Every structure is written in structure tokens, then in C-alpha cells.
Image 1 (cartoon, rainbow, N blue to C red):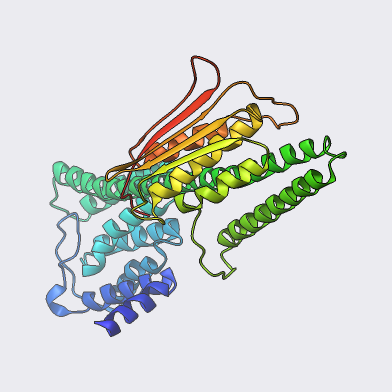
Image 2 (image 1 turned 180 degrees about the vertical axis):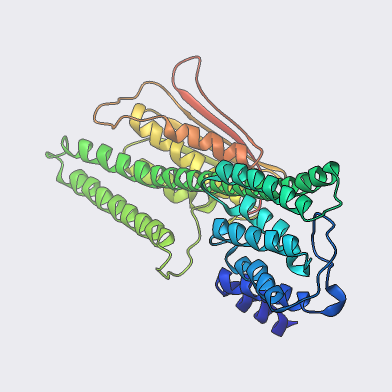
Length: 385
């Protein structure tokens, strides 16, 4: 079985002309078998003529052009049609007569230009052939010629159907590839947004606060140290992401940010000057699962928005791990300041909604009645990672 598969793979790698030549030679060899004499495609019902030297030339003219039926379908069709016409006029009725419908199917499937012209010329050429056969004493009636012509049209139609089917499949694959590329670009954009926006926002806020701490060296040093730590984390995360995007780079696998990193995320936000109250209930069933990863992103984006739009306002983070879902709620009062914080594009919340929806969960982000903002998410637990 393995040897057969290797031979099949080797055969598929051969040039298409070589593969079609093998079929053409096989058809020519079959035409030489005595029992198949007079068994080919024929029209006109002229008495079959015994083979002579010219018969072998007719056989070659009909079968050998099939070697280029896919590469040069027009050349193949012209030569095979000429050979078929000679075959019928001389009444050899060789087995290679079946090469004509094969050439028509191939032309219908592979001919790129001049399709209508080819169809018209072949139709016109059929008329003098029918007249010549009739002059030679053919007993074929008019309806017989019409039926034979319709069979040739059917062969061309089969080729055209194969062509349209192949084109539709190519178009479908193109759409699938484009959708895959779009989805991948969207995923990369989300990951970059989650990583870059959070770290850079924290650095901007911390740096802005440092401008007012020149009179307090100890606090200034702590703030600048926090900026440095945040920058290093950003560089580490970006390097890891770039390594994953580079197919030629081999890197050690690293666990994705999950709910287990929430404590470090909250502490980093506190160092940026955001008072955060963090409450965690239960325990993550699968720390490396998709649900836990989405939970981390929800909290990360919510804290980033709190730094941007309500810097210094009290923020409450509640995460509860249940048997069937993880509930997340991040609320921020609206009494903070936006001074020095970078603006947003709205891409973060939209990305969170898509992430949660992909797992079959629920997501909402709304303003609170008394001011501020609250983000809630219910993420089904046990999702595939």
C-alpha cells in the first residue's frame, strides 16, 4: 500500500503532457487489437474498410494529439477532428474514434480563449463532412447526423461544466483563504491591542504622574521604576508575540496570560496610580483554558480603559469561578481624570465582545446610573484551549 501511494505521488508530480501521453499511447495500442477494429465512434454507416498503412497514420493522428489536450487544447481538438474526418471518409472506423469526444471534453474544460469561435467552426465543419459521407454512399439519415451532432455538443457541454465547476471551486478556495487571512489579521490586531495598549497606557499615566513628583525623590524613583518594569513587560510580551508570528523562529512554548496572572495585572495597574479593589471567588478549573484567557483579557482591557478615562477613580474587579461559567465584573467610578491619558479607538471592547461571543458567553459594557462605567462578562467554563 505504501509503495502504491509513493508511485501515485510520483505520477502526480510528472508533467501533465507526460501523463496524457501515456493515455494517448494506451488508446493507440487498443486500436491495434483486432477485436476492437470498427468499434470506435463513427457516423455515416459506410462499410468498414480493412486496415492498411494509411490506417496506422489515421490512428496516430487521432490518439497522439491527446498528449497535449490540457496544455494546448485547441491544437489537440483541430488535429483529432482532422483525423476523425479522414477516418470516417476512408471508413476505417478505428477504435481511436473515441478520441473526438475526449478532445471535445478537454477543450470545453481547458480552452481559455476563442471558445465561441471554436464551437462555431466545428459546427460549420460538420456540415461538409456529412455531405462528403452522403456522397460516398452513406446510409445515415438526417436524424442520425443530428443525433451525432447533439452527442458532440453534449461532450463539449460536459467539458464546459467541468470548467465552471473548477472555477467555482477555485473561487470558493479564494474566499476561504481571504476569510482566513482576514480572521488571522483580526486576531493579531486584537493581541497587539491587548498587549500594547495596556502597557503603553500604564507607562504614559505613570510618566505623567512623575512630572509632579520632582519634590518627592522617593516617590519619583518608585514611579520611574514602575515605568521601567512596565516597559520591560511590554518588550517581553511583544517579543513573544513576534516569535509566534515568525514561522522560521523556534521558541520555547510559553503559557498564555490567564486568570492566574490577574493578581500581577491588578498590581501593575495599582502602580500606575489606579486604586483597584480585587475580589476573587473560587478557583480556575483549567488555568490554561480559553475561558480563563478570555477572562484575563476582559479584566486587562477594563483596567486599561479605567486608566485612560477615569485615572485615579476607584475601580472594583470581581471574578467568580463557577462550575459552568466564569463571571467577571469591572466597575469604575466616573470621578477620575483623563489628563495625559491616550485616547481610544473602541477596538478593545469590540474585540472583547467577539472573544466572549466566540465561546458562547455574554458580554456587556455600559455606563452606570450614578456615573462611571461597568463591564460584565459571563464566559462558559471548560472551553477548549
